[in-house]
Each structure stands twice: as C-alpha cells, then as structure tokens.
Amino acid sequence: MSYSISSNGIKAPEIVSAFPEISVVVPIYNEVESLSHLIDAIATTLERDRLDYEIICVDDGSTDGSTEMLRQLARNRSDLRAVLLRRNYGQTPAMAAGFQYARGRVIVTLDGDLQNDPTDIPKLIAKLDEGYDLVSGWRKQRQDDALTRLLPSKIANWLIGRVTGVKLHDYGCSLKAYRTELVADMNLYGELHRFLPALAYIEGARITELPVCHHARRYGKSKYGLGRTFRVVMDLLTIYFIKKFLTKPMHGFGLLGLISIVLGTVLGGYLTFLKLGLGQSIGNRPLLILAVLLFLTGVQLFSFGLLAELVMRTYHESQKRPIYRVREVVE
Ligand code: UDP
Ligand code: MG
Image 1 (cartoon, helix red, strand yellow):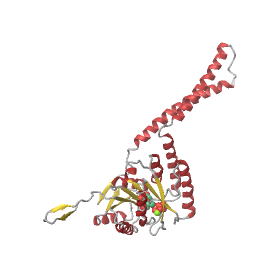
Image 2 (cartoon, rainbow, N blue to C red):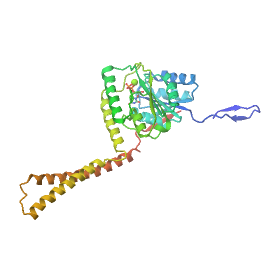
Image 3 (cartoon, protein in one colour):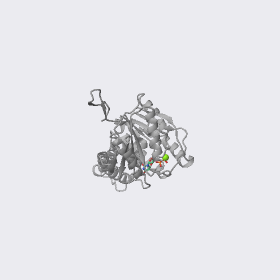
Image 4 (cartoon, rainbow, N blue to C red):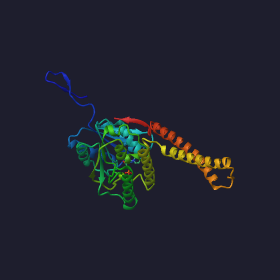
C-alpha cells in the first residue's frame, strides 16, 4: 500500500489495487546471460504501454549462477519476484510453480532465452481482451534448426490438432496469454505445458492464436534434443485418453470381457446340451476349445476392465501430488 500526503497533512491511503493486472511468468534454467536483458525488455514494454504488471521468474534449479542473479535482481526490483525451486524439475513444473504464485488477472508466459519478444505481450493481451480465455503465439518465422526442430514440431502440431480437435499452428510456442482462472488449478505434469490449449479446450475455453516474433538464441543453448519428441508423443496419448475416458473411464474393456464371457457361456451351454441331452461326444470338437478360450479371455478382460477403472480413478485422485518443491521466494 502506498500513501500520499493530503492537503491537511494527514497521510491518506491511495486507492491502489493490491494485485497487478498482469503476471508475466518465465521459467529459467541456466539463462544467466539473458536474464537482465530479458527482465529489462519486459519491464520497458509493459511500462511504455502503462500496463500494471509483475514478473515472476521461476528458477528451475539452475547451476550457472542464474539463481544468485535472480535473487539479487528480485531484491532490487519491486516488479520482480523470484521463485526458486529446490532442483531442476523441467519446464512444465517450473511454469506450474509460476502459475501458483501469479496474482494477476492475466498470465503471460514466455521463455527466458530472449527467443520470444516481450514487445508482443501487449498484443496478446489486447487479443485476450477481445473475449478469449487463451491466446497462443504462433512463430510464423521460427528461428530454429529445420530438421531437428521445425519438422518434428510440424508433425506434432498436426497430430495434436487431429487428436484434440484444437488446431493451432504452433503448440510449442511458449509465448501465450491466459485468463488466470483457466490455469490456476490445472494439473500439469510431463511436457503438458504445451498442451494447455487442448486441456483448456476440454474445459470449454475460447482459444485463438496470434503471429508473434521469434529470434534465434543469442546466449546459452537449448535444453532440449530429439528426446523431447518422444515425451511429447506419450503426453499426447495421455491427453487422448483423458479426453476419451473423462466421462466413461475404461468401460470398453469391461464390456468386451462381458461379451466374451456371454459368447463362451452360450457356446459351452450348446456343447453341454449336445453331450448330456443328445449323448454326442464333444471331446474332439474345435468348438470346445473356442468356448473355453472365449470364457477365460472374457474373465480376464473383465477383471482388466475393473482394474483399469480403479487405475483411472487413482490416477485422477493422485494428481494432487505436487510436481515441484519451492526452496525460497525472493520479492
Ligand atoms: N527450461 C526450464 N527447465 C528445464 C528446461 C528448460 O525452466 O528443465 C526453460 C528454459 O530456461 C527456457 C525455456 O524453458 O526459458 C525453454 O527452453 P529452451 O529455450 O531450451 O527450449 P527451446 O526454445 O529450445 O524449445
Ligand atoms: Mg528457446
């Protein structure tokens, strides 16, 4: 709270909102050379547009001095808060930690390596205020290696679009703006931060995209290789199942098992009738094997279905587990 001196000399509290409008969340893992440039650039842009903001840098267990530098910067700047995690958890947990500490009405995320351009932030917010819940950046002229980055991401974007029904050109772009309530209690893990539009869509969010600038990395190097593609595919599968089975968890297996049991029982009954009713020998009939097989497979599938239900339920409930631990918050 700040105070001003009124005409009668008595200090009167100014009416200042306790929380900033916009929280800019930046995950930081070994970005020591970019840090102060980045924070200056964000602050300059947002101040020029007279936007009320805070910057939340989440240090994801850096080992290159970023942690110390952030601590210093946060102590000296009122617009910066540093959330220091206990170790390196990954970009998604780092972002989730940022969401937890964000107090703004709007959250903007971007990378800490200066590849995203802070001057795009006001454009994203303006777009959001047209009535969207999420505005995703689209790096139309992406400055990354064509073969190892652009091609896999083109395929991934197409696949994600097909599976989730939300067709964006650039899921991987970190520069995004969200209404805070959209992400505040979203359960994230793995590489899920890039799927936020898809997850939000399942929750009924209005989503759009906006072309943004992209620069080549100036300092440090990328924290990812091709290995990420695999993890992204696994996450995509999970999303697919979440979307498919959110309302009907794994009923499919149980049903299949039940059909198999019924078929096996009918066949078995028929054979029993032949043996006991008509006195025929059934020991040499292939149908007998089929009946037994169907029945046993049915029992197995049905038990599997039950188990799957339990696993799905446990899966949803276990999501309360924190995916990161905070060591210290410097403000
Ligand atoms: N990052 C992080 N934890 C990690 C890996 C990356 O917080 O374990 C941060 C990193 O500091 C950067 C952002 O996530 O701010 C994106 O990482 P990077 O630039 O390496 O990814 P790329 O742009 O190559 O996809
Ligand atoms: Mg980068």
